[in-house]
Amino acid sequence: MQKTVLDRVEPVAEGTVSLVLRGAEGPLAPWEPGAHVDVALPNWLTRQYSLCGNPADRGGYRVAVRYDRLSRGGSEYVHLFLRAGRTLDVSLPRNNFPLLPAPEHLFVAGGIGITPLKPMLAAAGPSASLVYVGRSEATMPFAAELKAAYGDRVRLHSTAEHGRPDFAALAAGLGPDALVYCCGPASMLAAAEAAFPAHRLHIERFRPVAKEFAPTEPFEVHCVRSGRTVPVAAEESLLDALNHAGFRIPSGCREGVCGSCEIGVAGGEPDHRDDIGAPPGRMYCCVSRASSRLDLDL
Image 1 (cartoon, one colour):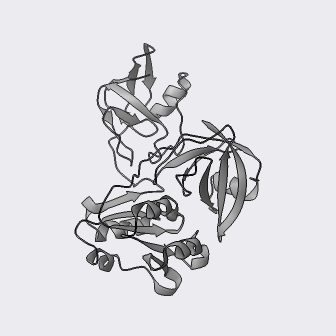
Image 2 (image 1 turned 135 degrees about the vertical axis):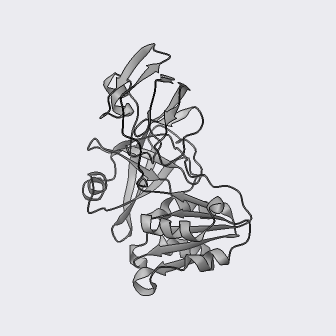
Image 3 (image 1 turned 45 degrees about the vertical axis):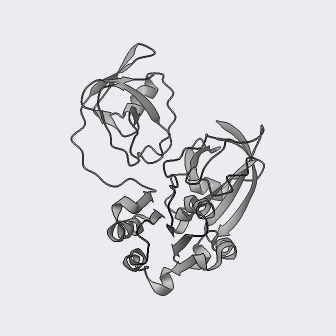
């Protein structure tokens, strides 16, 4: 973890604040557009936020937090109690949503989904454009800042005035090698998946997609480096079993979307249940399981 000091909290839209975190012990770890960090809040909760500042600024990170009326305690604490001057532990950046090169990029943001896309727009260059969707411009974080910086390359779309954007028309206007990056609420992502070719569409989700899996069964994991075997009960996650056995595995979302609980697999076949897509030899132990014994790099 990196120690930071909260430099300032400032409103960036109705119901959304920006946090600027400065390194307390020198420069912070580098990051690329699409990355996010875990922030350990003073109320013992850890939450994941996309980095939306300037990657060239090694002195600080910027994130944005929308107030959620159904908050599990994270956004509520940030909006009601967090104040400048507080020391916060922040993880090293992770990037499950990297920007790939292309001759043309279209970014489609819905509400707070602008946060990973904002630095991407800056990095992608003059052939990139943004369609930014929200209930009204007043509820859209960084809307004025983006329009001032990029002019006609940014289209602000108020659903209160114009309804949902026509994604099929947007798809028809793209070049054959354009890539589309989309982040926002589930309904908007579903519309994007229906309109844009799957091989050109990159999505980041706030919540996992509902899926059906076989009934969970107990299994065992053998921790190769420590020589220990840990049983995992049917009603227990692998993450919880490892933590109860004394292996301190970081975790954040516990839903298979953030990647903070990634561990190495030395043998066996995991039952991957995450929404990220674990690379070979890795798994996300908050949701993923196994039907037989696994060997883990622990």
